[in-house]
Length: 366
Ligand code: UD1
Image 1: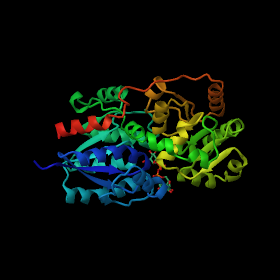
Image 2: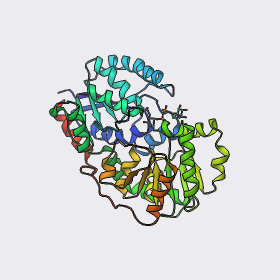
Image 3: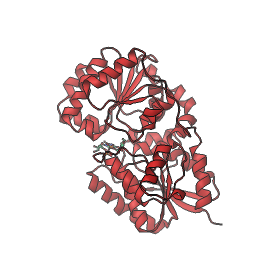
Image 4: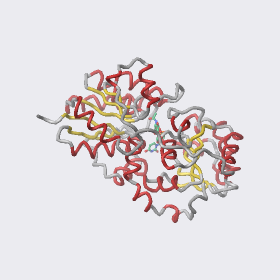
């Protein structure tokens, strides 16, 4: 029998570590034929190519090269360029991961062409519709055929939204497959030496959500907390292009530069970043995936958001929500420095074996 042709969609940085193990496993399966489509939502070497190189992801078979734009225009461009790809390739299915604009845009195109949609990381919800990713999650799941949630709360969300139980397959957390498979290379990273850091003696920070960095008041509140925390421990801040742009737009360069213990770096590669967070005293972040990774490393995480689509990291892991309130962030940081933080445990099926479960299900149902 001919293998089932599946277009694998990758667009932005948080997609790459999710599609890597799926691509590798599908290429080994005689029943599945993966074709990699890169939409080009992220295009900088440090936001894209580095991850392909480090994680040995094959070069994309098809590149849509959409680049950055407003949400509507970016989604429209992806849809416009993905439609002829579907017509030429005639896949039986597409596989999308996560919640970025590319995830939703390609899903809408496929749904209208009656091509099956597989969504890995389905069902997670922040219930915050001001987040572009929440809209992407809801729209994608509404039209997905094979839903693959990472955790039980995500299964419950999908059931509550009326999805048929037979469409839902709890596969676990695909991101953790890559993390565990990369442990040795992460350990070997020289990033601590490069930045003159001592394990356990610094804080890591990532910040890029529009609600934090596109809003001057919120951004300032977070910076005020950083100003206090960096007096106790150095803070390493691999800076996202959006955030760098907003610092300059808001004229905050001098304020940021005045914090002598706030160390800005370019975006880091996967192994260096893994080493950095796993060796941190604690992590400050507004990312989704980093809340999960810190839980697996057992490193305290303060999330600079009011809500999370990954509540299991708070219920079971090492994560707490702080929003962008200066005093709350400082109080939680003090709690960690006083040694007063939960230990956490690793959630069910975040075990490095999600890829195997995904492939088995696809070989069976497609
Ligand atoms: C996107 C995702 C977000 C994810 C994040 C990870 C959506 C809606 N958002 O947000 O879920 O957490 O990626 O990074 O899909 N830029 C560059 N080089 C690049 C990419 C972007 O310089 O390679 C700059 C551009 O100026 C762009 C800005 O960064 O305007 C923001 O990029 P964009 O892709 O719009 O959204 P992200 O904030 O990266």
